[in-house]
Image (cartoon, rainbow over all chains, first blue to last red):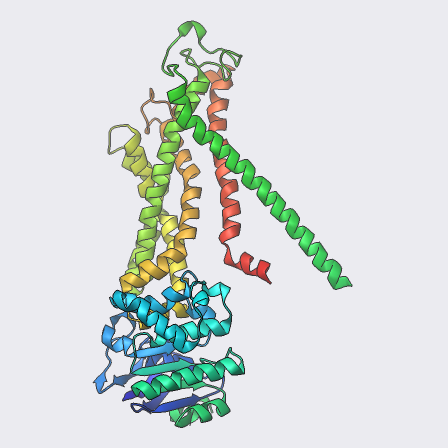
Length: 225
Length: 292
């Protein structure tokens, strides 16, 4: 289970962006989180990916409560969650070729020997041709770069995936291709998915269950009224 | 139609800008090349003694035999200037790069750790910068016997502060980007994130700071030597040359002051010109503007 319990988070303690959000993703389940722009979805996604420490509330990952976030989180917990962000341009280190981009988590966790094999396998899965792999981020399109970012998220075989508006910048065919890659991965491994987005049609078709932001943060609406 | 002319105007404006850049780049690079070649080649190739005293030829104005004239001990000033520039450049380059190394290490540590470590380190930097750095430099120099290395240490130890600030600011801005989040999520340790993802991003800025520091460090060496605290008087450096020439300037002999002064100013201008071009190149905002 990936559980978010009454999470309050933000960038200034006095003005939390997310108030009392509660959300549960069961293993193998795909949950879509719908919400308007600027409501705090991405912040919640960052908390779920252990990248942002909540001001209060907690995250429970596979039954183990998470006490530390970002670098302080145990590596096994951090790498159990694969993250794909909205903007591929910003989420790719501009200095790395796509091969190194995809291989970076393997190198960071000391699995250098499996780099050629895993990169080739994933490039094939996400549909990147070998000549694209030698290019740097500014030499490929947004769609191609997002494919590489998805490959990077899958390279450590995470048990959970957090896709924060993964397809918002992409055209329909790339969206369909990337969603299929995620679904194939989930069928093969039984990974759970938290897909954040604002596209109701997409999330309804993609996910087993779609929840709206207002039901995730019941007190938030009162606070705004 | 108006749009077309506007675009053409913008293009030709861009072209002029680029050509002045190229000119500036070439002139600066040529001046630096001449300086470096003179400093490296003249001492081994020209077998004249820069310390050779000839009291019969003292304080001669510039002539064909002595293009820069001679000083009050009859030593050839051109030769003295080249040897002086050699020492000053050595001090400048070594001190500037040491300072940049310290500054980058401190700034990157503060920026990458964040929190209380960042606050403590940066307050320390603020405190140190509140003391005039020439004063601090004099204090450091005074602890050693006169020589080249105390000057290098003194300049290096007092000039890393601005680099630390620049590097920290860069690291802070890089740290909040999603690609760092992605690296953390991929299991990268703090060290790996700093060394592989943050430092390569700040290196162009740090390099620029280092290059701009070279002339600054040369000026500091000259200032310390001029005050009689830096290099011993018999060692030719631009500072000691200017200091030694002070008396004769009042007597109307301008050449012993002018030429070492020019040797100090010309490399400074050349480095500043080169750094300007470099800054335009690494400025991502300017680059993205050009891509539009």
